Image 1 (cartoon, rainbow, N blue to C red):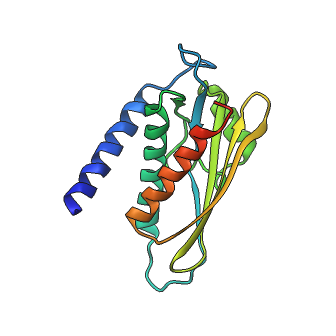
Image 2 (cartoon, rainbow, N blue to C red):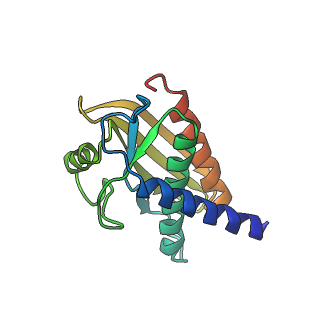
Length: 172
């Protein structure tokens, strides 16, 4: 099981590197697909747990983002654009929505996904995700999700659920 987890993490990192290395610089990919830039996801932990899990949370956030980009691109319904930001400085917690929208437009994205996680207790987390139409500057997709658990499997289930929700959305 541990070997399978490591293999998934390596494959997600490789997929993220490939996707990031080939950002789209046009309003739509050559096939007319919407182009989505995924901003780093902001994380707040108010659970009051004694153990500091900030390193695990940062790792899980980056894996969540990479898996989301990979799953959306693999669908063939959405192309990816990479935001040009320093690491750990490209979320709604670090810069404002206007700056993120400008970076998305510069990257050639038609849409921008922003998100925030909030760990409320040792078992319960909630998250809010918005997809913003870059040109219209309006939210075209909004989801609030909650999930139980703070381990790799719980985060992977949450990512798969969000990816399906985005792909099932009529905008694409």
